[in-house]
Image 1 (cartoon, one colour):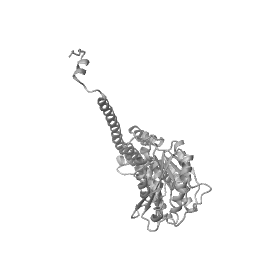
Image 2 (image 1 turned 60 degrees about the vertical axis):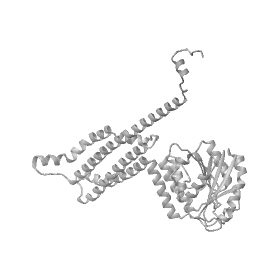
Image 3 (image 1 turned 180 degrees about the vertical axis):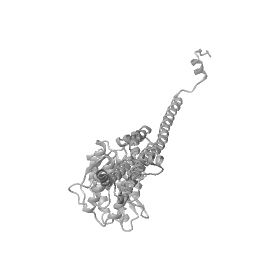
Image 4 (image 1 turned 30 degrees about the vertical axis):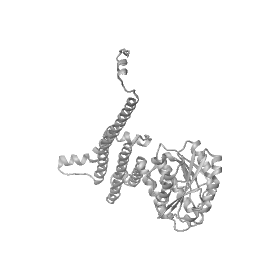
Length: 425
């Protein structure tokens, strides 16, 4: 098993020589203490304008790749991966914060635990990470853990090892500094990929940091959100729906209490109730969007059916909507029935506006769910159609291979197959 280590570097003249020497020196320990028996080192200069290239070029045992202009942290790593010849590919930052000998632990973990990605976590007690960055990492890890159902501690670690074979499954990944949280999110959101974390030491960097806390922090959060939206849409939309409906319930508590106590509502409560109506409509819309997104994801391949998606599938079915409509009918009759009766019998409507608002919200929600069910049924049809088509292609390919393996017919073979005798010459 061969490991390729990629070191991306941008203006790291103060640390590049030291990290190359430490990585080359660590090869012996990596080979001795892990399943790896060969280590390759690739250094990628990402448009450096100082002496980074000059210093890195002194080391013949390191393959040097030079970008004339800055393309980004992720672009440098991906270029190194493209040039790598190892079964495992890893990377670490050029700033001297990580110990290259820790690759032995990561390579052992990825093999022993049958993982696809092994990450060195910088959140341990020995870490010298600045407090503001530590706080940001904890927030990102908390969000990603909640969305993926897998507990992680460091989503943006700059030292990790992965199997090269999974790279096509991971791509596309961004070119910038948000490459690492994007990779973490991508792995955690895919049920077919396994990730393992190992605590490692982390020291203060040499030279000036390229990370901008506010700008890159926002970019990291956006990356996690986008990956979650692509790979866990049902859970993300469901969370938004729960928040909207919960807030609606809290805001409606006072009007409901007032109505139950006095049998009437104050006129100035119309604004609160209209906002509650907006939140309720938003909650149903987000829920419907989650169902549609989940079905769209299933069009692209087999996805494990989660508990959340199973519950939504049950609700967003024709039977589910009909059951909800049956349950809502008595409430709708109670809300607007008196107004309809006075309109038909006396020619006028004697009904408080709050009843119309609530009935309209319920009717809107049911109609939106019905439309969503119709769309989902179309998507389910195409999912089933795609699965059947794939099965037919597999069967046809197997038949073709079997035909290719069958011996070619000959006149003698035809005679033998027909039960005839082979004539004497």
